[in-house]
Length: 180
Image 1 (cartoon, helix red, strand yellow):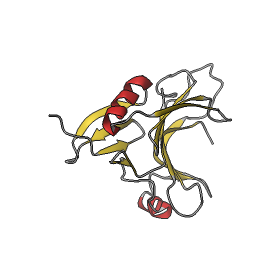
Image 2 (spheres, helix red, strand yellow):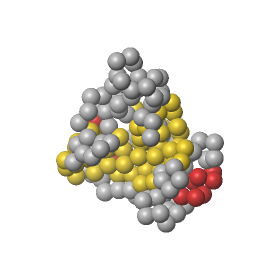
Image 3 (tube, helix red, strand yellow):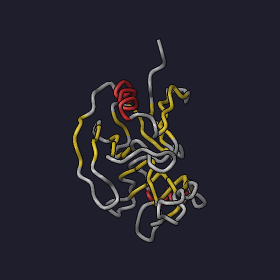
Image 4 (cartoon, one colour):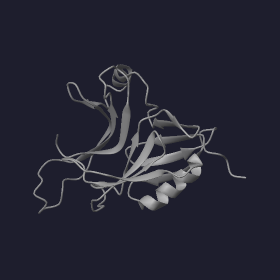
């Protein structure tokens, strides 16, 4: 019988399903088909997600959300193009879902002290004056000629204190940054 999932770990590059011993049971990058990753997560959580459509806004086009109540896969209506545009991204709003612990590869979870996370990652944190922390800042190659975008794009794991009460309330991975 295969080992049971105990946690899900997120980085700027992938999602890992991990057992109690810390062994990686499976790893899935953000450029794999969304349906394949949703199937793996459904198996890990032991329940089907709630599927819904979400409206887009300035920085995020509309798409489909697969939500397990505290953890969602957001499949935006954009063209996947590695390494710039992933097939999907994940949104965490809980520390555990379906008995599985959710954290970043640095051990950050929803509910952690926002200021402690910033203090623990001084070299890896990109931060705005009153906004999110961007862990695992990863610069990508410049956009190809003809894109009309001259900045150096980057991806990160976005750690957010939505209520400004020093508590991590959301984590997004991978988060795109095209020069903000």
